[in-house]
Image 1 (cartoon, one colour):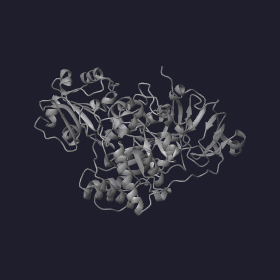
Image 2 (cartoon, rainbow, N blue to C red):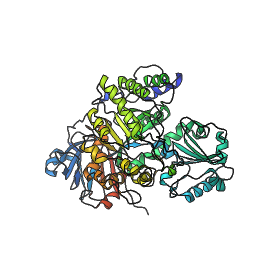
Image 3 (spheres, rainbow, N blue to C red):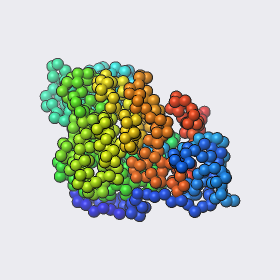
Image 4 (tube, one colour):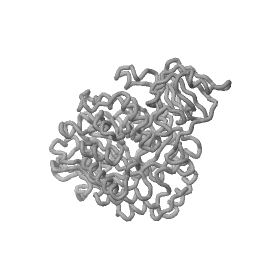
Length: 589
C-alpha cells in the first residue's frame, strides 16, 4: 500500500522506490500495531529445565516454554506447558541454562558500519600512533578515509593537525572523519579546495592557526568536505552485502531486532533487496532520514512524497519514524547546549567561550516539520545531543500537541543526552519516549566532565530520573563502525550497555552521579520491552508471553545472580528468531 503524496523524490527515483517497496506488506494487511496471536497447538518444540527470564510480570521466571508456528504457545512449569505437547513435539533440555527474550538495539547504523570494513578490518584507534599506523598501512593510492575518530576518545585529548598527519602521509590525501567534524591533511585540503582564503562558514568552524592558515580541522560545515565525501559513495550491491554481513554480527550479540536510525532511499532499497531474497535475519525498523537544511518547501515536499509512513511493512521489515538532525554532536563540541560550552574546549580544537554549538534547524521550521509529519501519520524523532536542542524539540512537540494530541504517537527524543527535570517532566506529560546510548557516557564521560563541569554532568543520561518519571527509555548502541560487538564504535554488545547503565562506570573508572544507576532488571528491560515499545511492538516482542514471537536468547550464565563484572561479559550461546536458530556460539580453535 503506497500512501499518495506530492513532491519528495524526483521523477523516476520516486517511482522506482515506491515500486520496490510495494512488495512489503502494508500495515493494514498485517495489523497495526501488530498484535500477539496464540497458536492453537500442539507444541512443535518444548524447552524445559531452564531458567527462563520472561520479562512478564505474571510469570517472571519459569522453567519451560513451548513454541508453535514461530510463536510462544505457553511459558511456565513443565507440567503446565507440557499439556499442549504431542507425540511429535521436539523436546529440548536446557540443562539449567538461562534464557531471555530476544534483545533489541534501538539505535544502529548497520550499512555504514559494515562498509567501513569492506576492504580490511579497522584496528582500535586510541591515540596518534594508532592513526599513524592505520594511514601508513592503507592500501591503494586514493583518499585514506579514517571513520569515526573522536578527540574525546584519543589519549592525547585533541585532534592532530594537518602538519602532524603530513609527516607520515606524504602527498596522499587523508581525512579523519566523525560525521560532524573532520581533520584533513594538506593534500586533502587541496583536494577539497580549502585554503586560507576560504571564508569562515556560518554553520560551523574552520579552525586556523595564528597566521590564518587552516589547521586541518573543520567543525560542522559539511559542505566544505563534500568533495571528499562524494568519492565514497557506495553502490547498491555494496550496501546490500554490507547489510548482510552485519546480520550475523547482530545475531551473535543476541539481537533479534534493531532500529536502523538513519536511512534514505538508497538504504531502503538495500533493505528491500535483503528482505526479498530472505537474507534478513534480524527484525528491523527503519528510520527515514530527511535533510532539513534546505528550503522548507523542499523538505515538506519530500515528507509528503514519501512512499510509505510509520507502520508500513511486516514483522521482519517495517517503516519506523521520520527523523531530522537538529544539532551537532556532543563529542565534537557542536551539540546545541542550554548555555555556552565555556573556556575548557581544548579537546574540541577551538576556543570560543560564548559558543553554544550548532542549531541546524530553526525552531519555527522544526515545528512545521513535526506538524506536517504528524498529520501524515508519521512517528517523529530528531537527533538532539545537546540540552538546548532537546528543549527546542520538546517545544515543537508541545506546539503540535496543543493542536492535535500526540499522546500514543510515541514521538521520541534521539540521544537527548542532557535531560534535566523540566525536560523529563514535559516528556512524561506528552508520553514522549527516549532513545539513549549508555556507551557514550562510558567512553566520553571523562572528557566531557572536564568540559562541562559537575552541574551539567548531573544531567548526562539520568536513567534513574527518567524511569522514575514514567518515561520509557530504550537502550541502544549507536553502532557506527566495525563488525565486532565489543570493539565497534560504539559497541553493540547489549550486556556492555546494560552494565554501563547499572554501574555508571566510565572508561577511566570514575562514576558520575551514582544516584542515576538502574537495577539489573531495569537495564534488561531497556533492551527488551522498552525498545519494543518504541516501535509499537510490545504486544509481539520484548517479553516471553503466550502469543508473542518466539525470539529468545540462550546465555552462558545466570544474569540474575552473577557479579556485575560477570554480567558485562555475558556470552550469547544461541539466538532464535521465530523459534528458528539463527546463531550458535562455537569456540575458536
